[in-house]
Length: 395
Image (tube, rainbow, N blue to C red; front, top):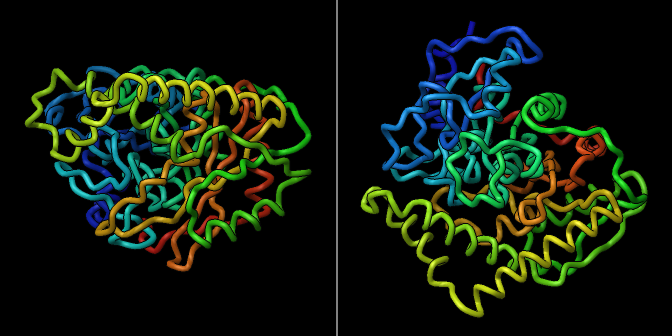
């Protein structure tokens, strides 16, 4: 029996869920007895499918997204819809129409974006698994900020059916959980999951990235590298990470502006309209340069994992920040790379910063070697033992 009263009491503090299905119940299968929350841009039959937008507030999904249907088919109870950034473009989960979601580790702090409701709900124990969407890091960044586990499959390894698209080439539905075992269980059901071993004898890390990282991220990442089995190789990309991320943002902004062109623009927030304006203004040589950078980065990332099997990086350059602070522009500098290159990636807890907020480490793997990626993450997770339950947790 699902204790919705207890869940709703904690949710009043966090604003992670926007809507609940009071009739939700599980069935038989591998996920029997487990509860799942779904980001509001992923279709769940008979539930609001708002994508965090006022323009879609009254839209009700007439069927499950394929990823949801697969999980429901294995007995999971789909209990409700989770708060998110408006249209999945943003970094805080401070939604102008559905409110701000709070980080369970410290109220007043962001859980990250755009799948902030998903990260907060899992971290606080409101559901066992949550689905998010990841365009340039929106599953992995909230996982890192909330101190949980998140997986972005390769885009080509999971159906995006039933997802309100932000950027079709980058978008990917992914699960979040409080344990790597549960994360892998969901991933195997949702996505095409292969058992091949990755190539290479050394894990690669990327250097000379130019990313300005919080001191505790640097220190924890150095300690993390000491726990990696085998040698650590260094690799380089041709462009600064911030330039790569900016090119990804421009592509997202252009495509999302076109996708939302049919919507009443007065029902989009001023901030979203501003973000959507950047892409269409980018033309000529500048736009062609952006595309060239994205193509070159994808090629280089794929070559690195083909040689080394895995890449290890911090998930985000910082821990969670207060809602009343400006969102750091570089949040997705590390995470965007896996989306651009269509590669699977996992974020696991790495440690805590001086504000006692979680930090994450990200492992990027090879398409078709998902089991190997999870095996490496499991070995590292056992050594780090960095998961911490937040203060605001379901009793």
